[in-house]
Length: 84
Image (cartoon, rainbow, N blue to C red; front, side, top):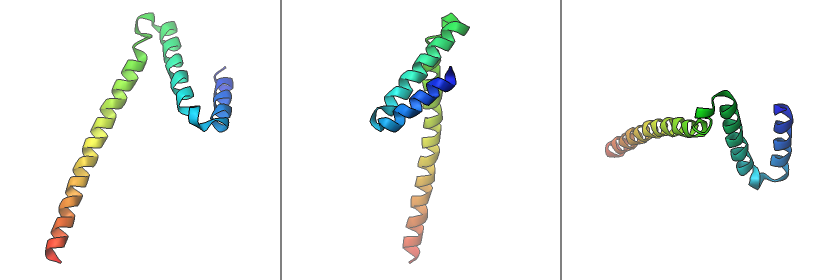
């Protein structure tokens, strides 16, 4: 069943790239809700919330590290400019 759904979504993505993001969001949300309701009904609706939360934490940590790398890179350029 999952393979068939994946094939249909791939065909849809190829035929209509603009709507691909929405199709994936709805598919993932439905999958989390259905699998959560079947496994543990009390956590079925919280699965997407936890997924988005973990993604937000990971993205925040990654962006913070990237900001520090950019800050250090700017300091390197300032030091080179002063010596030149």
